[in-house]
Image 1 (cartoon, rainbow, N blue to C red):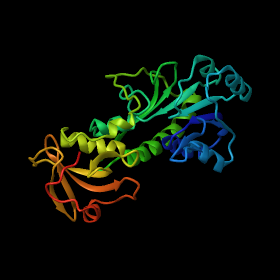
Image 2 (image 1 turned 90 degrees about the horizontal axis):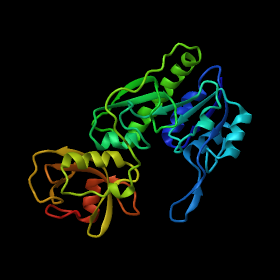
Image 3 (image 1 turned 180 degrees about the vertical axis):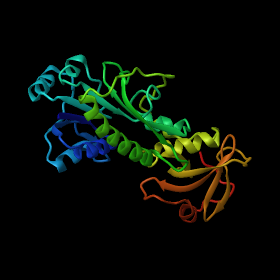
Image 4 (image 1 turned 90 degrees about the vertical axis):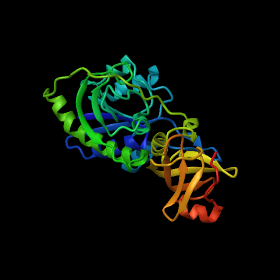
Length: 308
């Protein structure tokens, strides 16, 4: 099975790792996004999939526009039998989708049609979902609208954050892909349309990571989970920006939102608009991550202080 893989993120790396274990497959090359400037020096950094592909000695393409005719021509020349897509970041048009004999198959990190779009893992956490999953679908020109080949449910645990849930879904998605592709090629799978309520997961902007202490504590905890560890849900204490990396719900709290109501070695408790949360791990601006007790000792946070 001659395969072209398209992906960019850490989720895609996990899927690629499973695909590399698949018997009777040949990865002709990997398509990923161009290197992008990042950090204070704005140096160019490769996407995670490129780093993985380089380690594996795979051919790499990084077109700015994947649907440009010059790149479509490259893929026609390579002649993949199937294209596998996982968190790539560009919509594929019909000229490209029509190239492989068995189509383009997408590994999506939700139970479609729930959370169609680019950020399904963060949205599932932000909404406080207890269950999500992975979908293997045959791509069409819509955004995650194609028919389903296979799905697998995955539980969301209370201590899951974006990083841990990405790991779970990436591994599960890769394994389901490897199980599904041979059956699809052998004609053992009948496509089925997506069924159920449609919801969307557009990219969450970094501004959404700013904590509003007027919100319910339940929602703030989910916000912390959705943005941990990067970019990190954040607040301010004495003009210092602080990322909150880990927090849990404390329901029986009544105080002005943003007020620190308790400080102990377990962490510090902050009141939300309804209920409160125990903050367990933080990262002050330009500093390393630390326990919230360590932060309290170093930054002299005490009961009655306010977070903004």
